[in-house]
Each structure stands twice: as structure tokens, then as C-alpha cells.
Picture 1: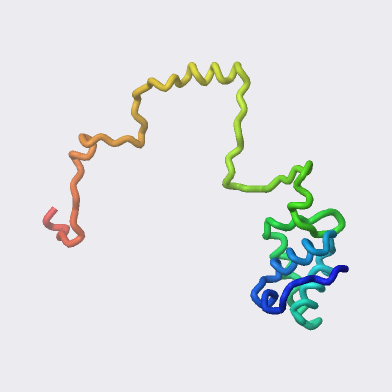
Picture 2: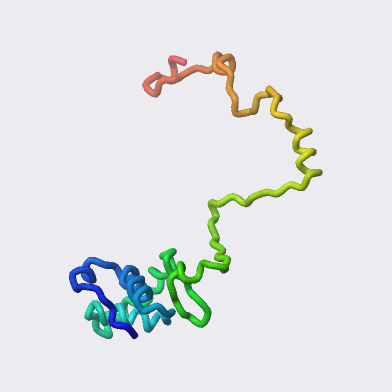
Length: 145
């Protein structure tokens, strides 16, 4: 394993995931999470008790940091090293799926809606619809209605 070149002042200002990034970047090889966190702990002079109490947090941090990728057999590496020729699928619930229509379907859609329809939707409200509404102030007495 290469000696990591980073000053103590820089280390004190960095998070676990930032230190892990530097380790993987400078080391140039994939590592198991236990080995990687052990190196982080060595650099930060953390003892075995701190290692044991923070290893689960470290796993969660790496899992949510998009700079890292978990490989087969529990190895971790930087995502930038593995992005070429590799398809990485992410589950984003907010992302809409693309709908691909074949030519027959697209013609059918064009005949259903041609864009010139001036019909109003249920969400549109005309001012005339609001003319019969009465505004009641909370301070009004029920007997005055």
C-alpha cells in the first residue's frame, strides 16, 4: 500500500468519505470496506473502539456518496475508474420514464388531440362561476346570516 500524501491539517478538516476518496485515488486499486476504513482510522489516529463504533456509519456514507461504487465481492472503488463501458443504473423515483411510441401509436395520438381544441378543463374557473359565492367572516354571528 502506498503512503498517502496529505497533511495533518487537511486530514482534520476532511470527512471520512473525503479521506477514503484520497486513499483510493492515490492507492490506485480497489479495496474492501474494512481495509479502507482501517486506513482512514490510521490516518486519523483512531483506536479499535472508534473503528468498531463507526464502521457502519462509514458504510452508509460510502453507499450514499455518488463518487464511490461497490464492486463484486465487497470491494469499493471510485466510480470514475469504472464508468467507461459500464452501465450504472440508479433508482430515482422522481425521474419520469421515457415513453416511446411506434409510428402507428403516434398517428393515433395526433388524431385524438390536434392542439387546436379550445375546450376548458375542470381546473379552469370562469369569473361568472364565482358570482354566487358568499364570503363569511369568522367574526360574523351565525344569527346574522
